[in-house]
Structures are given as C-alpha cells and as structure tokens.
Image (cartoon, rainbow, N blue to C red; front, side, top):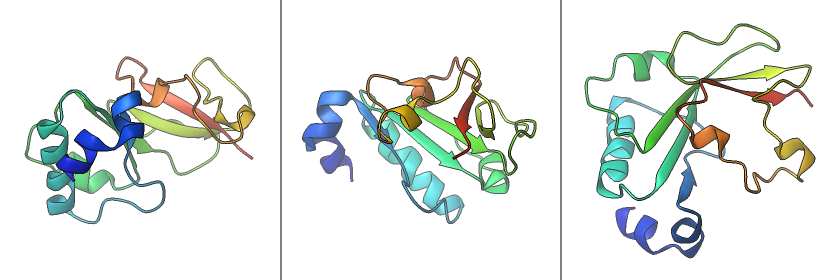
Length: 126
C-alpha cells in the first residue's frame, strides 16, 4: 500500500487520499495498518471517515498529523459526535458544508475533509 501511495499518479499529483469510499474500519489492527501507511507517507494527507467510534476512541497508538479521522454523525441535523474532527448530515447549508453535491460528487479544489482546523464538515442531505 505504501508503494501504491507513493506511485499512484492521482494521489501523487493531489497529495490527498480518502480511505473507504464504501465500508469502514474493521478492527484496531485495521486502523493500525492505516496509521502505519500514513506514517510511511508523510507527504500525503489522508481522510478517514468512520462511524466506528469505539475503535478510534480506544486506539492506543499515535495518529499522525497527515491522517484526519472524522467520526460521522448518525442522524440528519443532529449534534456532531464527541470527537476532535467530525462530519454530520444537514438539511440546510452552513459554512462548512461540502460542495461536492454541486460538483457531480467530486471534491474539486475543496480540501475541507482533510483540514484538521475544520472541526466539523457537513454534508447536505440528498
């Protein structure tokens, strides 16, 4: 995986990678493998959306700065989960709303999900 991350043109050119377009973390060992890939490729920013709060909150290792884990909320318009970086689904746009819904599902030049200074990214319900 480290080799692929260092050589895949789309990742090398953008410097960004999203884990699990579909699916989720399966275990502490799975999360640890993701952490090890991120540590071995510090020039790539990783975004890991997850609903597995127990796995991430009980993880004993150090999460590298280039791996942004966003704990996903479960309900539309609900408060974000209690974690340092989160994502929620909303019925109305706000300042941190993802704009992919307006861009054929593509991020374009937006990098909010990879930015640890943005505490909660909202996804418009569709």
